Length: 204
Image 1: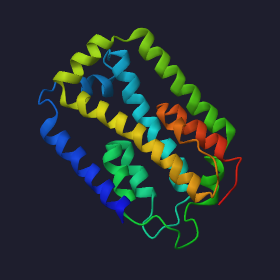
Image 2: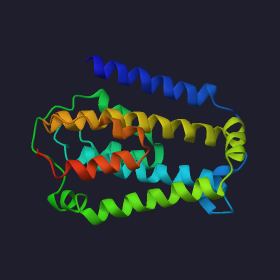
Image 3: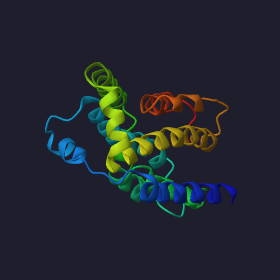
């Protein structure tokens, strides 16, 4: 019950901040990113990693999708809404009440080594390219003037914090004694690395 209340409060604060606290400006950054109209590399990195994060969370949540409330709608929604869509899943009870509903074919695919290596490789490439070619000064300017960039950045950090919790949650589900939640502090790569390590550990 305490978990549900804490997650609800965090979700509500996040929504209120995005609505009332973020800058009101719109400098066309979203259009640049979607149309690939010479976007700032560091902005492109964060935007792209926000597309990989839902896959990483999906790997963890879908292999435990046995609660009364299905996990897949929240995972699907996170591709568009990020943490706004993922956090509400943890309002509900995530205790097992039925067999895992995720098709075995999907579970098998998302546990393949090549799948993990591809996602980690893409993430590393995006991070290196973003910091090598991007400008932190331009990014900060966009952060303080654009509502989209501001909320996108906060969403990225919220997902990083959520990944720390999800790793601990997964370890508890798998009844393992590992303490790998610290991997969550490594944006995207940490959660993906945990997924790759944990698939060799104790199963459901």
